[in-house]
Image 1 (tube, helix red, strand yellow):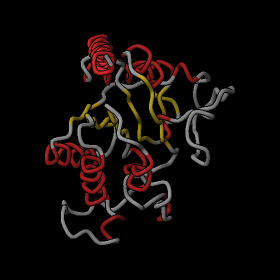
Image 2 (cartoon, helix red, strand yellow; image 1 turned 180 degrees about the vertical axis):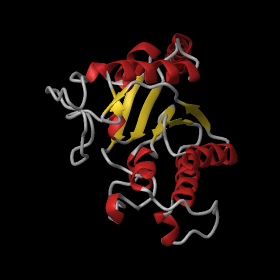
Image 3 (tube, one colour; image 1 turned 30 degrees about the vertical axis):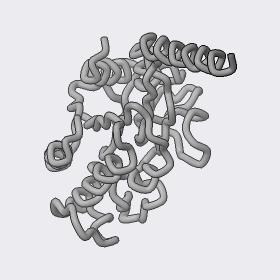
Length: 230
């Protein structure tokens, strides 16, 4: 009798698991980004935001988290938001504006704070382009600390580490429009080297260098399309 009850329980559990899988649990998407993906109160404490729930008409017309590209993507794409670890001014390498050391906010440093999701969206390199970070060479082995202050070696390390930390995760790199040509070319080259998908954004509406409400929707549409959504 006990064996029969145990078998029934196990069978019910298996059936429930099968039904859950068939129902298609929503995939979890996490974001590793810079100012374009921030919103005050929706990023880890200590990270600097660029978008706020207050009027800054000279800088942006985005004043509601629901106007951000990532909120719309999660809502329309049928995802669950895991972590949005975005930090205004963040660079891929450790080199920041005016030659300052940006190691603490670097994408490479913050990657380890994200648990493996179903989909990881990396949206960065805008600040590397704007601050004039050293480009460096394509170096994939025996990296030194000095290499991390150069864009190409630091990007290679980021992609390699993301794949190592997140086996089974779909990693997609979002490339901003209007970057320096050598930055865009470097990202495409490194993504191809590591077999990482990338989305090359185009014609994004901006104000003060950042996406407007219209630009946020354009980003959402282009990324969602690349992900196979609407």
